[in-house]
Length: 501
Image (cartoon, rainbow, N blue to C red):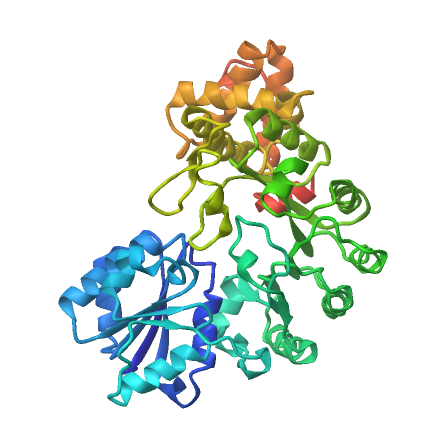
């Protein structure tokens, strides 16, 4: 039985926890005494506790994040109730700041803030040797990256076959965007590139084909970015998929030349625009050349085969609904495959909190700490934007509605989709668990009743999108004799639906 259990609650099974694997890789002589245990949101806390205690550990370390802190708190509370002799350590970004305010920190025996790679090993050694430290909150040591053992051998064959593999070529970020925890970093620190690529080569040789880089600024150092892309170019096949987060206004010609050589389906870029408003950018310490960002997005969509996922944040201090709408329309016109509309969150420790009073920011007191209102966007409108984001995910980002979306968006995408969002919520009273068939029928009703579109043309577009996505069945308006004859299409993944449109 292991003396140490490394545990976390993932959002979904496919997300393999990189943090746990770093801790396991850096346990040194304690490594044989440790076991990684991953759970998913929705599992009953009592069942998680039962599974952990079945290992009879002396120490349980939990990784706490914004998406799992509520569930982790309940698990730790139950664990300390039924097995108080087990030492509980919590760490991760969610508990690295404002520890005094968090129940999970009060329940745990120890809290490791910041980097835990080496600090957790030292803490476990002291506890197992019978010399536990007196202080409860322990600041994590930030060593040189050469001292940190890479974690990739701790991805199992099942991970490689069935899950997303998270990797990082660097840590930190030199930018100071106040909504991000990386604003607290002094710079970005790269891992030794040859050492890193050697680890990736071993993963690839074992069959890994799905790599997701967690680097905040993958394209910060172009020479390293080019070398990493060339590594994957040498190994391109029909299964390879690599995801990067990139700085939108930094895409030099050397980088473009390599990106252009990749086939469709191999590269995905997450491009954080967040806001196009220069006054808001200055207010939140975000440096972004909007003209260059716009040109680069256009190049990625028109001159490369990369899948482009772009982000916008609603609720930033100083931005009203009109400004956000104009930003959405500007981004939509560039035709990224996906636009993720997020609501501003007050991550613990981030500098965005300094604007709370001056800009009337009202935060959800519980995770995910989203902005409920600002002095520019009231609570009711923030609710509308939140529903807009959810419905956009279902329609705009799903890849199912390539014919319908232009009809719905017209020449005023934000305003027209907001009209649809308000209408759909009034009709259904829900934002989740809307079946595809009901969504299609609702789209037909909105296009014809609210926008005055001819019934046959609306039906034709919706029915063809429905069938092209691989769905089967007969929509309500098709039963009325409107729409094309049914055909069969193979089901497609969301990303594939976008790329094949």
